[in-house]
Image 1 (cartoon, rainbow, N blue to C red):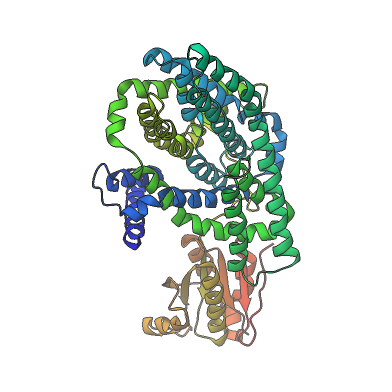
Image 2 (image 1 turned 30 degrees about the vertical axis):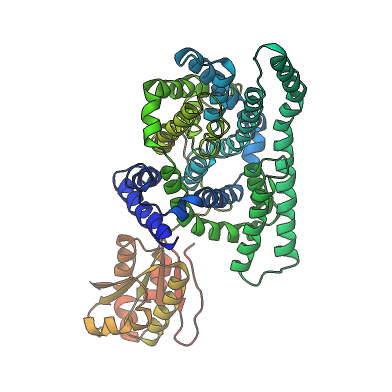
Length: 550
């Protein structure tokens, strides 16, 4: 098991980095890494890892769904509420219908089995779509009209539609619907009796998913914010993940959409307590770094290369027809009469096309239940993953800057990763030492870089390189750079801050001598007045946050 964990992490990380260097989404490299180490190629995946693959993928999916829920924007969804509702079923239904027609005529299957394949293929994958939409939100693409939020909300709800209809048609086939004689009549009667109840599963799963997610979110907020049962963010994460696990496990006993419930729980926490949501979102983002590798490598490892070859060109044609006709028509029907432009709707076709999670979960069920053509249903399901997951991921990254409007990123809805750099003006005085200590303390909290600047001018005491390196001793655990400049101190400080991309300037506050004032004036005052970035002044005896430019 330990070897399997190491293998997944190592191959996924390396393959993801290679893909990133090739300007491709990291998940494409992770998927290919999974195929490589899977049973059909190198076959180096330990048996224990393969046995637990489904459960590990569900845990990774839990993480990304929680992350998505904590970043949903209520205002954007409500503004296009009818669009979000239509996205929950129209794209899936229309794509399933198109796939069924293509399958019937290209493969010659009966209509029930053709529809069964349609319901397997039509579901969008939160495993691929959620990370990509969160990336768009973090970069600001489409956020003004809430396009990532619409895809997140609608795509997750559509899974309930696809899975429920898959169950209905599978039951029809297993019960012998369409067979002749008394057995066929009995099967028809039984299926007809159950069809109304089964169709009600769709709104029931969605409604109960929202209800259970709402209840779970309120309980989490009550325990963590009002009762304050957690002593640290780690304890808060344990409680948060515990309720997520409960929602995943309980869906085997209760008829609700676990995917939707998990997202709703995160959304309720965000709306109830933004401070708690921010803390949980930050830690969830860290966990997802590892979860993403496990999810996509293990999905790739589940791919059966031989079955894909058997599916052949007709399987590829069925998938592409479903995407180019069914998914396109479903998205455009869902966004009709909305404020979205043609280019934005076209982008949503690509952004909502990726398949992986549902296909991996249900693609093998018909084969296991002895359905005729079950091996081909599995093959085409796997082929859909290989085609649409990389295509959707790459297309999202490529088309977003070309088809979407870039808006302002809302840091209350998404974890924004920023790098920070602090410039410390250092002349060897006690106050400059205090400024360095203050900057180093903050840099540790933000994982920032330091630029230690020493300005040499007539009459100043020149500090050697060794003295400057020695001064950096208390900040030796921080990435730093020593810069020596000449000329007017204030001008050198401001110019260096600009060229080095500093976010803040730290400078010691000390009394200047008469000669210094006559030669160069008050350096600290001049830097505060002229700098376009915040300036923090520090006394030698007491650190005080200070002035920012007006």
